[in-house]
Image 1 (cartoon, rainbow, N blue to C red):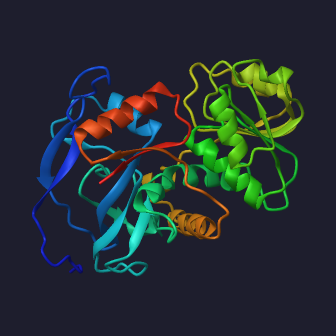
Image 2: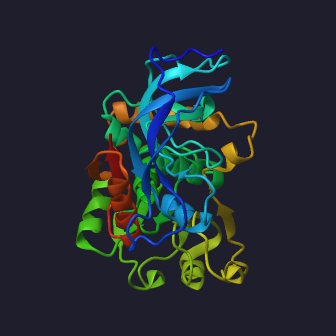
Length: 337
């Protein structure tokens, strides 16, 4: 048995895809009415108040192909718990939460969503739902990149190069590195507005990724990359021997040999690994989100919201996908219910 909301409605509205349709086509996402989900033993049923859109949303849309049933996209969400599963211990009905969820279950672009409590954090008290929804996926990816993959600690020093600094994950990573490590943070940005953005977030220096990076910086200890294709030699040149590179993208024909002579360690970060494989430490994601919320409420970390669209419907989610695919926005695109 689960603790349910007072007046359950058997259906809910959602935004879904039926096929992998490019964003320059009309109705590549549609409004649908589907069954409202029921929480399992370890699940929360969350009434969605805001979602944000990530590059992975657009990639999933274009890779999923034709669907037999409407596929609900979306990962980031903020909302209120309206029902809990029989074995839930971390949350109660009425709690405000935020999370990025799992890539194995229906997404957050809906009125309600079920999510495993271990992947959920208590939302920052100082933020509205729209600003909270901008944080989970990027904050988790940044935290895992920095502390789980690169092995950085509070006492770590040296230089961290953050490629594409104004993007969602880099925006979070810059803040974490400044607040929680002794690293010198160098971000890349090519436009005046993005250079101003990364400086505001805490980058010590900014260099231009539209030019050869190895001519602007050298002896780098750690590199975070969300766009690695074609930059392998450039990165290997600017990195120290026995340094570390973490990447979150999918490089095309990667030249991994470029990193061999310097024995540069390569690390992959994929935020969905813990949920996808039900790892024993899956609950770390909820703990990380609680730490992020505490940092936000202490003024150590700020939301990375760039644009807010009002109304969780196909028109706004489609607009969000288009904006993300253009790749010119600093921070996150949020859709508020």
